[in-house]
Image (cartoon, rainbow, N blue to C red):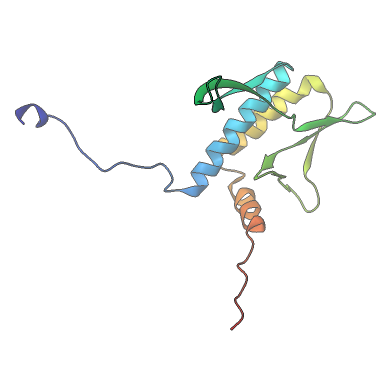
Length: 143
């Protein structure tokens, strides 16, 4: 036990203590993926997944997962970028869920701007509202 005296011990931090920071990190990670997709249209996400093998058993494999872009181009050449959290676009202003980008050449800098705002915590209130809007109240039991 003499070798352990020089070590510092503490409890394990599960990383889920502050839900705001977890939401912020998740959105930042997904924006990074969208940026990579904007730079390379053939970009796919590689995930580890359990798949049925030849012998009937399960094997752990690397599988490519296609990403859907968060932007759409209109007939005028403008791009509408939506930022999604919880499967729904974030509503930045009342009824406005898209960011207008003048062209494809401005898409990556716009994603960088949104990413910087997420990391600075500017979208924390919108993310909280997004999560509260998704919550469904529990049904009351009849007596």
